[in-house]
Length: 111
Image 1: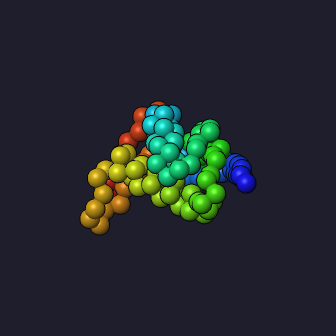
Image 2: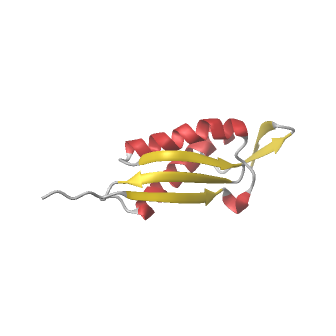
């Protein structure tokens, strides 16, 4: 006896306080990164997109992975990568802010 499971989910998540931090340049690198996280964890990212303040994912999950765990993996890993890649190499007590100005992204590190 065989069984078939097909679980498709359209997931949407936003930046903190819906801040418009995802510039076109950031999105061009973030979408493939999210696809890689999905692939490494047995998911299939069928479509990835969004705008400056939120992300849309259409994905297929294996029957052994809960939606909550999938979102934890995707959001946690992508958030860490964004912070390390676009705000600076973390650590210490500093805080980072990514801000757009005139189409150019600036990295501001404050303490």
